[in-house]
Image (cartoon, rainbow, N blue to C red; front, side, top):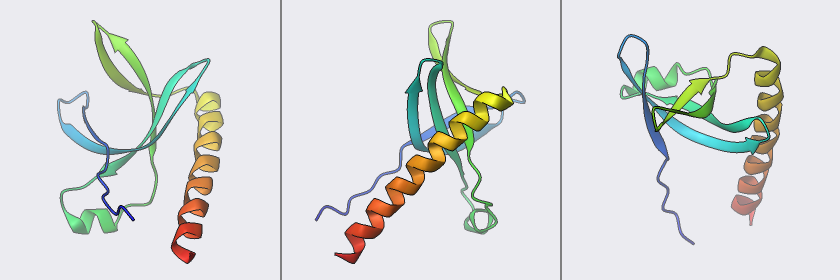
Length: 102
């Protein structure tokens, strides 16, 4: 059994030029684009304990020849994507629980 696990991390810079680290939880491609579910990563363990379990849905876009992540601001699209991500998370966790019980 291979227990190696390395999180896929991405660093994003906000409008105030502050860097934020995120773990890529999942990605999906639809006819509307490529979307990622990102969870904040904290350098301070105490901050991570306060984490509410929320994640951000970002769209991968291209600007000036570079890939950028843009937060999905269309509420209807965000709700549609959240539903897809939530279903996929449930399936992933069910699979992991089944593996652990074997």
